[in-house]
Amino acid sequence: MKKKWLTVMLALTMIIVSLAACSGNGGEKNNEGSTTNSPSNNPSTTPAADPQQYGDTGGLTLPIVKEPTTITYMLPSNAANLNDNKLVVNEILKRTGIKVEFQTYSPQTYQDKLKVVVASGKLPDIFTGLKSAELKKIGQQKGVAAITDYVDALPNFRKLYVEENPWVIKSYGDQSGNLYTWPIFNLNRDVNHGFLYRKDILDKLGIQEWTNTEEFYQALKKLKEAYPDSYPYASKGLANIFRDWSFGWGLGNTDNYPAYYDEKDGLWKFASVQPAHKEMLDFMKKLYNEGLIDPEFLTDTQDSWTTKMTTDKSFVTWDWIGRLDLFYNQIKSQNPEYDLRYGNPVGPTGNVRSLPEVSDFSIAVANNKNTEISLKLLDYLTSPSGSELMTIGVEGVNFEWGPDGFPVYPELADLPLVDIGVLEDRYSMWLEGAYLRPDRRSIYYKFSEKEQEAQDKILNGDKREARDPILNFTDEEISILSELQTSLQKAAEEFNAKYILDKNYGEKQWTDWVGNAAKNGAEQVIKVYNDAQKRFDEKK
Image (tube, rainbow, N blue to C red; front, top):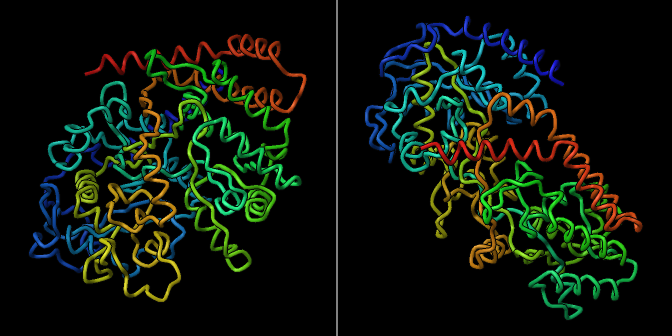
C-alpha cells in the first residue's frame, strides 16, 4: 500500500507542477475594478448604476468590477442551457459586472470530467468537487488560491469563517492555516432523516407511537400479530443501517463512521467494538429471529422496499422525511387513508444525528489573473443579497412573497410542484457549488405538515446528538486512514451481518471480533483521530 501511495503522490505532484505552470501570474492579486479580460470576451451589458437596490451585501461594494469581466464556473448540473438568458446569469452581470459562464456536466459524469480538466492544467476560474487532500496539495503548489490570503477583501467570508466560526479554517485548511475551499453555510435542514411509521395502521390497531426502544419492539410485535405474513420493519439502506441506527446508541458519526467522538471521555473511539454496539446488534438479532425485521434488510432494493412500505408487507422504516409525502402521493388513489409519519428515535440515547452547519463541497478558485475577482464573486454569493438571488430569486421579476412568508413563482403556477430542481432548470438558481448560504425563506425550507411535525418532534424534544469535531489530518495520517479505514469498515459490516443472521453467533464470536479488529488496525486508526483531535484542541 505504501508503494501505491507514493505512486499516487508522484502523479499528483506532476499534475500540480502543470497547474502551477498554467496559472498565469501565480496568484497576483488584482486591484478592485481592474479589467482582466480581453475586449473580445467582455459582455456588452454594463454594471448597474445603483447597487443599493440589491439589499444587504455584507459590506461588499458593488459592482465588483468597473468594466464587465467574464468568469468561468465549473459545477455539476442536469439543467440545460444555463447560460442562455437565465435570470441568475443576467442578474449577477447587472449587479457585479461579472459575466459568469457556467461549465456544467451531469452529476454522473462530473468527476470523470473534473479529472481530465485538472490533469490538463487549464482550470476554470471557479470549480467544485476535488477531494480535500488533493485540493490542499494543489493549493500548496499555488494551483488554487489560499482564500485566507484575501480575507481583508472578503467581508462576508471574514464575518462567517474568521470571526463567527474560526474552527472552519482549523478543520478544512492545511497544516499552515491556509484554506483552499469556500464553505457553504447553513445548508442543511435541522431534521432530514429518521424512523418513519404507518400511522394509519398503528391507529387502526390501537398501537401508540413508541417513546423508547422497548415500546418500539412491542409495537413491531403487535404489527406482526395483526399481519402474520408481514415483516414490520423494512430497510433499503443496506449496511448503512448500522450507521443510521448508531446515533440512538450514542455511537454515531455521519462522515467518519465507525469512528466517532465520545463527548463524555473527550476521545475518538471505534464504534464497532463498543459494548453499546453489541447491545444494538443484540436488539437487531432479536428482531430478526422473531420475524420483525425483513430478512432482506441488508440487501433490499429501493423498488422492492417501496412496494413493501406502500402495501401491508412492512410498516416501519428509516429514511428521508421527503418520503412522508412522496409515498402518500404515490398511493393515495388506491389508499387515501395511507399516512406515513415521522417516529421517535430508537435506542437508549433517544437521539438522531445533528447535521453540520458548515458544509464542504471543495469549491475552489484557480490562481490566475481573475483570482481576486472570482473570490469577490463568491463573497457576494455568500452575502444575504447573493443568498436571496441564488435560492429565492428576484422579487417582482420571478417571485412574489406569499402570505406564509415563502416565495411564490407566478410563471410556474401551472406546475404541480415547484422544487429546487425546477428553479435550477428555469432560472439557474440552486446550482450545486454556487449556492453558498441558502436563504431559509426558500421553498427548500418550506415543510409540509408532516415534515414540520418531524422538525418539531426532534427540536422541541432536544433529541439530536452533539456534532463531532471535523478534524484536519496530515499527509501521513491520510495515508494510514486510506490503508486501513475502508477495510476495517468492510470487516465490521461483515461481522455485523453474521452476528445478526447466524444463530450460532454470540459472546465468543463477539470477543473474537473485538480482538481481530484491534489486530487489523482499529487502534491505529483511532490513534490517528485522537492525535488530530489533540492538535485541533491546541490550535487557537
